[in-house]
Figure 1: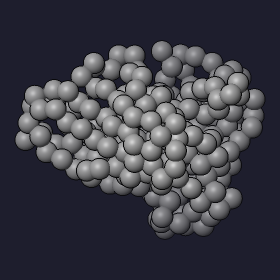
Figure 2: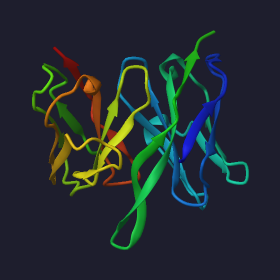
Figure 3: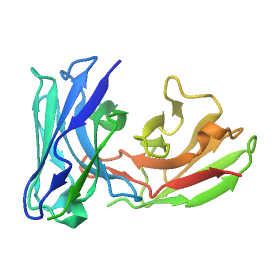
Figure 4: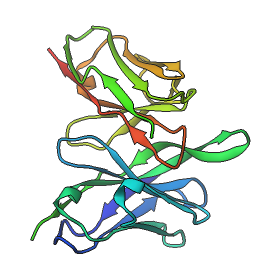
Length: 125
Length: 108
């Protein structure tokens, strides 16, 4: 059974870079998408971006180019870096697998399953 | 961008009640819609994908329907374990995945 677990600092200073790692167990990273989603306390869900197993990435344009997602399938890990953080980036950060589906014979991102338990990152000096 | 509107934003119902949550999108997304359940303090959990396909292990009291711009999640007989917030998600385009604002379900 595929399981994901986030790790990283729980406190980041404003203007610095938030860095998180997601460790995958119970399966390989040789297929599907690997993705990050965040949730400000008490609010809704925001997709941050994802990396395809072949290495291609897609990011939420609302994050203004501050996002970088990388993966190391040999270690069964993928990572998130978010630059120049502010208090607005305070949130619970989730990693998740993005299941694929086919549209007109092309592989496309589908739904998020499973999810990691999430990790709270607070941006504060 | 595709706007996603869930309604109601919250509801309170009794055990055994039939509960319906609606998700409306600003563009036709065919059946590219998923539903999630998020219990307090927990990560979201996939319930339904492709608008109406029940994820393995999800109780059969959950069902989804709709296509195009109007979608529904139904709980046929509300149980105490169903107290949670429910989100819809569209995957019509992988360039900007988005979620609905959520519907909080409380047990009377």
